[in-house]
Image (cartoon, rainbow, N blue to C red; front, side):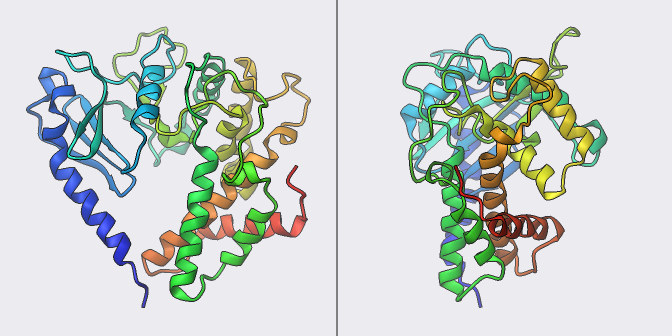
Length: 333
């Protein structure tokens, strides 16, 4: 029988956070939303999110660096029209509160991407937003983007589970694929300097987009904005193209939306890729895409074990992609 006592404790702690969050973050909300009934949007050990009227409150993960989060909030509040800007307290102008050990922020609520309508997914807007983000100068002192650290955390979780249970089917394939990655892509060494200078989201995927109902009719991104600054920072902008690349490589993303995403990114001057439309994007995307395959496969195996079921089709595809990566014997340069 699996021992998930530590995870159960974390889940109980996150549920307690959900109960405290409305009162803790009240001062950050616009007056019209302070009395709204809270609706839980997410309640996980790595963050809790509630909606109150036209706003969203977020309690960030325990252990979040306050100074780093403050810098990330300042970047989101800047003049760029790409990242969703946080609310400011009406009396003090503060964007962050610390209450009972929680770091709390508030944001305008937006309409998320509809997972039941993949044909309407905003791939072109996502590509254009990423390109504009990468052209936005980073604030001095902004920390490295958090993408590789998420790969490291996923591998640790899988390793801890394998030790606790005596083994996880498929885990060896993930570990072999991870060994093909350079140390920086596994979060155990500094990232290369390539492409530094602009902002990098660090965890870009369709779940990180919302549409603002108040956007102007001539908004170049049709009202879509990037959310979640927890991994925002400086680094290789190719990382922000890695999850769509991983999905495409694993057979989860069809060719048409993949090409729409890349085409919009290039058309907007995205700095991560060669601007020549005939240039091979995989010379740049190979390592970040392999890293995201490893991360998603590791998390999928952990999730399946926690829920007491075999890996589903998507999780199996990610593990199969790891097997191909490991079998290719790539050197990770």
